[in-house]
Length: 271
Image 1 (spheres, rainbow, N blue to C red):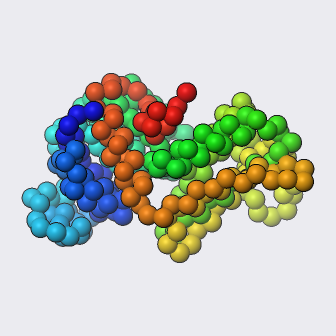
Image 2 (image 1 turned 90 degrees about the vertical axis):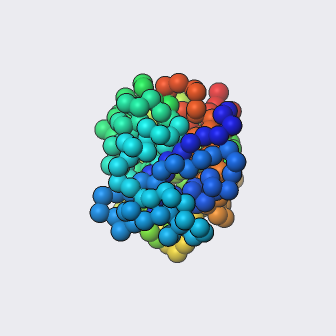
Image 3 (image 1 turned 90 degrees about the horizontal axis):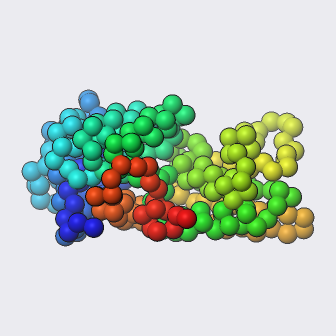
């Protein structure tokens, strides 16, 4: 890992963007060099201190990502799918590191990210926390150990302003379960548990999404068998767990070379 990693933040004025900039400024391992917001944002041309507090930094919010990318070692991105895809293509051209915490991509967008990873170091995860990634490994192992007579249900709760459903974390948990069972996720996933005809199909993986209040992220996976259940859960109590993971990913990615990685790779938990 380099001693000092230059970073820019996409979605700088968002909740995650602000926390990343604050933590980066407090660390000797990072230098914040850019803050990017969408065109038309009311934050453009303002010093980042106007919304994260503290003294003026000289870092002005911009809608020109390329300038920031060129002077950065890594880009940390918690924005929107359309914004992330635009940034991904620019990062690929510049051969830099792109840490993606954005969720809600469609199939075509996922393919564009894979294409960009042929040129850039892309670290993509719906959840950067150590605890969630430990949970992913646990779910994969449980699914591998328990046969399809055990039903799998995933509960996904977030704050009322979250725009995508299921969350990226819930989908990663479903993917871990499918991988453990060596089945295709797309054909076994059920996210529409409303109306009639709701009887569980054997081998199906269900997700129920709840949205309300200020919940940062609560996730549970239930393996329901005949007369017994196993439940494993993770509860995020503050956003610093995601910030720490994202910064660790940015530092880890410098010098790695092209490829599509996950938080499991960063934490050394991938097989």
